[in-house]
Amino acid sequence: MTTDSTSGTGGTPRVAIVTGGSRGIGREIVRRLAADGYAVVVNYAGNADEAEAAVDEAVKAGGQAISARADVADADAVAAMFDAAESEFGGVDAVVHAAGRMHLAPIADLDLDVLDSLHRTNIRGTFVVAQQAARRTRPGGAILLFSTSVIGLALPTYGAYTASKGAVEAMTMVLAREMRGRDVTVNAVAPGPTATALFLDGKDRETIERMAAQPPLERLGTPADIAEVAAFLVSPRGHWVNGQVVRANGGIV
Image (cartoon, rainbow, N blue to C red; front, top):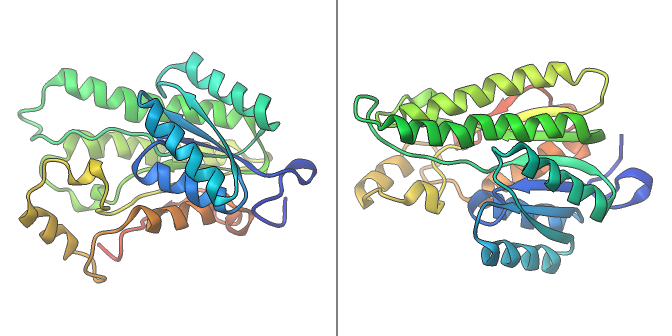
């Protein structure tokens, strides 16, 4: 196992793939890992300009970075993204799967085509990324998936989303045990309400203020709050944490 966050195999920088790295929490994780000296592959689904902006931020923060377009539910595209990481930087030490979709509607009213699309990204996409990560993450590395603290809150209209993230938590526990003998950790981080475009979209001011008041810390989380947790969990400093869901939510129960 390496002794610091910047040294990978042979003393080269550790290499991270961050899905959903062009915006929101994923983009902040890209910047945070780059500040730790990582070489980062910034995955994006469609907005190349935002991905290149994230790459520029990563380089300014002190790391190396490239962008890689891939639909996370497309097995061939995800395999090609891992190929790019190995070709450009020599291997993969950390995989942070932050890509995801959210659609809110009562279970009774949800269009099943929307359900299928959401679960394609959040369940199949997580499985596809985790499958490549399980095959290709180097010893001493880490796989970090994303759940949500809303699972425990059971909020109305979140049925489809929380169902998908419950599947992610189940995958996390199973994969951590399947990686026995590989010296690779598998964890999930479950953010609480976090001030991202994904969270804020469609919510009125009253709803946002009510949710911000829920944690004992009495505020929404920020992408930087979650990025700090992610950076710890994928670094050698966090390597004794394994098979866990870390609820980064300011104390919501």
